[in-house]
Image (cartoon, rainbow, N blue to C red):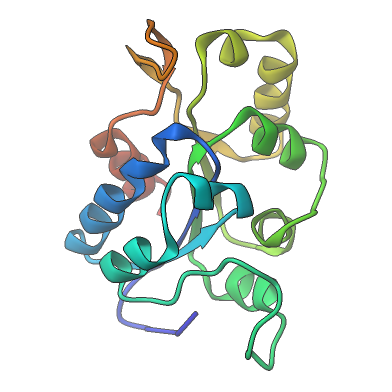
Length: 180
């Protein structure tokens, strides 16, 4: 993750939700708004979107793994160099992991190591979103100062129209600007 002191640096985490395809448009909007964006892609998110697509739109290398040619630990460097960490979309699994301090991949390790503010935009099936465990985990995140960009009612991958749809990019951008 390169330092660019003239722009605010956002680390965008993308998890394995069908809504991951929206990350390219979000990256484009963030760049238009003047942010330097680096994307961290979870392993299973690769099933929904490619690192090459995200790299093309962000102009930065996509972080996918702890291991690589870097001399520094990737997660620590990304955590230190980010002005804000945004996870959009965030799955129920990812929310549960960070709510309980689990760090078993690059993105969860960044979350534990960063001093930067964190925003999470959930996207999942409505039953998963409304599940008591997920709601308890969201409350826990809020108690620890992590901002939640609530999902909206919309078309879900299962074919239903219900709450759990990723918030619109305009709402995510608004939350980012308010947080910074």
